[in-house]
View 1: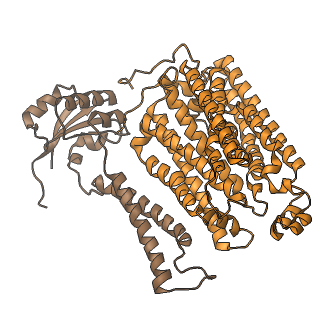
View 2: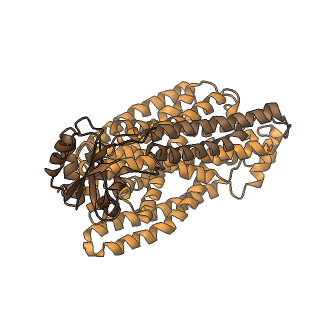
View 3: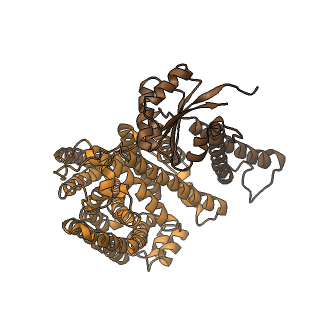
Length: 180
Length: 424
């Protein structure tokens, strides 16, 4: 992918989570969709305010779990029935009760790994570069005591001049333009 | 934070809403109808044997709620948490149904000889010679005589009832006293109830194990399983949480539960129930896997009695009803957060528990082992438990009415009144 150029978005800084949440709620009411909030600690109201929606992590976890289950059960069946048939105390080769425990363990293992890596992948992590770190106030404040709302340039409503005016109407501490 | 100053307040009236009386009346009517059905079935079957077996099932279920409710009451005192505040009064009401469960048990104690082989057979070697029992049974009856005899059965059960009664009385009395005391003393009360409950949980698990061994496991004199008590312990958690959720959501149609039942805690209870669903199959399957792997003549017939001759269908359905359906449904976040659907799952779970007990109890008897067949009597497994459970529910509703539904001297009250965050 060629390097993106131009404006990533407009970043508004707030001093308190309440200001941020109010601004985010207003922006969503006014039709903004491509936007995000950045806070030093989880602020659930902010996630709600920008329309936090369900994601695909549960589905990925389910599929991962089922894959683990099927893979292990198939492996055990293949080993015991076809590849290396052994007579163990006269039990049938296909002794499914004995297969359950490893299959169960693999279900858990695959589901857990799928959940963790699926979450990271859907978050776009690991990210070696993010344009927001070009903003000095973001670099210094986002992990300590500042609250940010970013309107992204991908939003169809986005316009550099109008967007800045709009954000300023929400009474932020500052509004800066963020370049890719 | 400034933008969420909308905490609710507790309503003035904290008693159970009036519709609990309607529940009681409905339960009583269902109980009467099913008692009549049970009586009719007994006439059709020309025998009271199945009535007693169904009665044992009903006893085990209601015992699970009364004593399991007491145990979960102690657990929530020890762990704390908002779910505990929510369920506290319903659990107390469950624990106060113990006298009714004792009455149910009396019937089993009086009619012991009709249910338990060891109680019926006084002289095992004579019975062996007469061909009534086989050699293994004769040996087991003789060998286990010090434990499996009518006196020990009655004494052990009565002692256990007394211990549970003591805990029920103590915890229920202190629960009310705490609300009358000044809020400044709440930390002392929390510690005190915790200190009573901690050892109580241990004593509960021992006494409950003793009783299920006598009441249910000893139906088959030859068989034993060391995980049996734990299996019932988890089963009681399973059914108590299911009923706790049904009651909380039912009560939330009126005050005060309308105010205090938040989606967050409902979701937590759903997750808690899910854990018991998982633990339940884990233990049940472990027991099976160990016995299946060992394949010993002392142990495996118990399973063969329950797999062969049509019982395979029942155990397959049991697996689906008892685990697969609750498991897959409770995986869903949406179902756990939806009142109507969560209640349906919990009602299903109670049915599944009864179904599982049917599979545990009926194959103990000579005609039924490895031979699932229809008789009018087998329908008693529906009629008698429904009647007993209905009367129990009526009694439970009565108990629910006797005290306020919310403990006010509890730090969790303020938290539970806070507005909750909506999640996707």
